[in-house]
Image (cartoon, rainbow, N blue to C red; front, top):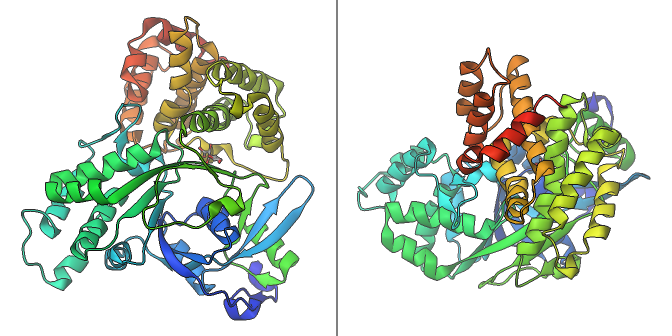
Length: 482
Ligand code: CS2
């Protein structure tokens, strides 16, 4: 339908953009969130840094963006209306499977920072362990370590260029290890790697994933990484639902440009960063980024209050027939559960700078923006990882303080019910632990509401929690109450 609109193609020459940028950031995970967040901050840092972006899961994103010279429209959508801005910080977009190009850019002396938006699952770490641990039982990691050994490790053989080119690595941490090996060989400067994913201690998780793989391939490389790479923590925030075809038509209509890949986002945005950038960084503070020494309180506030409420709506809200965040917010039962969950979380977010009352008011406004159609089905993905960061720590803090943590456990009860209903409706479970979860539901097909089913599902999320009889009984009792 968009093709019926006679519009000027969105290209650098048609928009008159002439900015020359220094592409000193390599980004992996070219999705809408990166383009609404880090690319926007880099543009508003006003110091001409550019980004070479690689796709995470959908190579198509690179093709689309390349056809538009890397530029796109960012639509900031408030309850009152839309504003449009052309973002031009992405100087090149590549398929993340193109290991030759990725390796060359990671090794380039000009590269100062690698940023990541690869989702919680992309790190292949076991959630909730301190320190974070790479899941070495993950078959993708196992295969990638074997492949890397043929490329850079002790088992290195003289592969032909063709042989090297045909090898694949499916995990992002392994791809980065390959790039860092080339950087070491090129004697390039230290650099920073910064995760922009919703994980607690995301810098430490990234470090664990990358250095553990390197260690299993070539311990001297692991040491080089320890000495030369700074793993930066960041807490990121900007609600950015997927762009729909209707959005594309509206953008073409409103701007006069035919943009095949615009991004729709909310007015609010936040980026809290902690760590060193040994080869420099854009002045992101010019765009409002906050640099702090202790990121933990900010990280917890975001993960528990925003993401926790999102997950609650994704499970309980969908069970009650809602499809978007703003729909679910119109349901008083759902908002009561959110507020109860926020009360529990807020008891453990006591640093005065966090200003929890104002944060809660702002969140309510953001969630109720009726013009942002944020689908709950998408937020519901990867629950076994997300809830480990969003609900379990709040329960643990409540439990340690001698309280029941009922509101946090309700989230887990809603997740169990959601999984059973998905399976019943023949909707595949989207989760890195989907096989285990599906197996449990199938094995308990005649007794989906038995305590044993609840226990088996919660074991996938957190075995210690599943062994806590009081918590398990509370979760089980709340099942079926949505
Ligand atoms: C959401 C997040 O899909 C999800 O899990 O909770 O993507 C959320 O929209 C962002 O973290 C907002 O910054």
